[in-house]
Length: 207
Image (cartoon, rainbow, N blue to C red):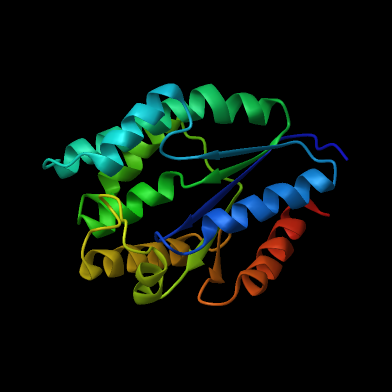
């Protein structure tokens, strides 16, 4: 089966929501159907991104909110131009673990940044490239945190209040753009969540 165009599907949600497990299940499922996929992530998909990811998640000294935001945007600009767009031109199904909505949720709602400004900067970084579908894995903040274990990165280590603001932000985004963003209850088992993901993606691709 070949498509006339590429499809861009992003996976979003709080750290500990289970999206990485689900994106790997989807990649395997689509490949078994003989479809061309590209599995990628933010930050860290490019060589430049790998260096930025190391700073963003493990730098131990203070980082200003603006510096944090611009590093994510720099990673995204490189990722969109070097990896995502070429794969879409090759008619692949691009599966991306985090994209523009993460910056709005974390740096906008979580850090209380200027959301209108972030939307403009996201548009500049991606040259307007939007996902065809975004699956949002919604999970109670306490459950998400309990899944992370003891070793947490710089963002995972932020307080519960921060993570609750991020969750609220994600749900607000879904409310604003229900056609693109589909919310899945990620408090359930891996298989229950997977059944929802499969159904949503099959509808998009006409499988």
